[in-house]
Length: 211
Image (cartoon, rainbow, N blue to C red):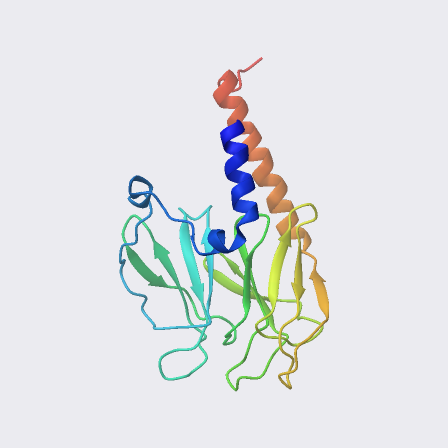
């Protein structure tokens, strides 16, 4: 312990030496962190959103963005890990770029909010992707059209906090707003939790028995 304390004191006393020695990964650890190429998307895109879909066989949704010709995309696609393949979804209701994509608390639905439209104007339009039915539906618009904003799910309430971004005049926004999930999604969350509880009880005590 005394030796460790001396090392800590030396590091604190020599911030320059500490800054000059960036953290390194031991060779044995580096082997655990690797990259490997997978199949390319069906459309080249940037400024898109990506969301893991845990209840759809752990697939990944990539939605919207800007293609190689500079066009804002209305397309979206799903990556399936076991088959290393991409599959297009139905078209989104409108094109989005620099939007946000948030997996809601039902682990089924993705909220795609705002972003730039086809003319690169910040928009308030929002839509929902249902990963079980593979469908897009409109939902309530943002109060203020915005792009490049942030969005975070609030686990305690199931709401989504959207903050900042650029308005239609490309001015940074200080405003923020909350998206409240509609009742059908909340009911799906309840049904999912009941199902998980039922499965846990069945594994622990066996299937229900007739009286």
